[in-house]
Image (cartoon, one colour):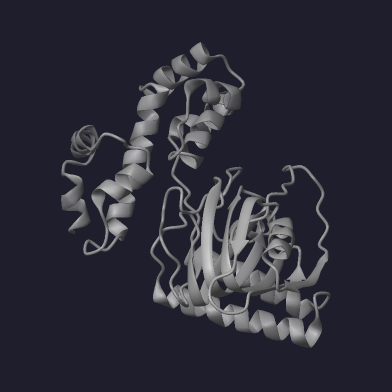
Length: 328
């Protein structure tokens, strides 16, 4: 239900290796051992529901792109932390919630969903049949660099971003081509290499990376340390970031970080963080359906605990209240 936790550093060499395996069984204890092992999970639990218990997990492809299927007649719950893969999944039957800690958004049958890849999640699923595609982060970044100005930034994705039907159709078409390429040529073939790049491109259409425009003042080489701190804010705005954490990222003292933000950007680090969070709320409210979205839920997701103060700060920044933005 979530991404594996192994990770490679940015300078490490990475070879492409085939992926092909299957695990299956009829005992909950075996399912926990096998499935948690695949995802380096922790605190996993499985139990019987109605009928005869069984599970099966298959994977085929290579270490850059692999197609997988997970089925279970039973209940499964577990925790997983971010890794070096992005995972898109969708149910063909059953039920599941990829993140019960924060988002609590259930999976929908046939709707591809990116699992949260930037923080720990706890998922639950029951009596399900699920299709998954694993994409190596560095491979996705390589493809993204051909379409976007990614620079040196980490790619960040909003896993709750509403999907467009045309992009979803393109994604499904790419998977059909990927499956044919695997069947006809195998993972060493040129047709497979091209098909998996098209799949990564289709992924980026469904879930475009969030590439915030950074302040122009950060472009000068002498601002490299401050830029590192600012990029960290843009990459983790929903997290409880501290000034000490920004100092560590930038390789500066706490006082130097505070002075650098004020001197270059005219605000304190925490004020800048609040501005970025407000921008994220604004973007999400514009994209969400006012019939189903909640201003409070969106604000909480981006780190605002006091809704009264949030609403006032939002109105000051955008000249309207969040409910007005949502109803546009």
